[in-house]
Amino acid sequence: QVQLVESGGGLVQAGASLRLSCAASGRTFSSRGMSWFRQAPGKEREFVGNINWSGGSTYYGESVKGRFTISRDNARNTVYLQMNSLKPEDTAVYYCAAQKGAGLSTIPLGYDYWGQGTQVTVSS
Image (cartoon, rainbow, N blue to C red; front, side):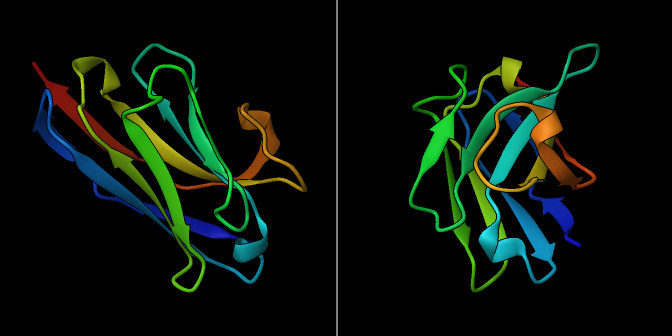
């Protein structure tokens, strides 16, 4: 079993940066791919990006490509989401999720453990 706790959200102005953290507990963390999703009010959960078990491979959604970076530190059981050049449309609750089984998915059904989410609000 994996437990995930996100932190680092907040209110920032457009153009600012934030770094989110996702602290994991559980023996299987270092063998799992991890993803970040986000959900704005009234919208479906959106794929932000993922990272494989070793950190050697990442993939991003089109809306964040070039601005967001995912990394992980398996020694600390933590995944990070560095968000630069934030825009008002990035406002959402951000969730980290642990991949179900092998591979990396871009849809929520591919993940079996989720954090509680952290709010990011970007003002214009």
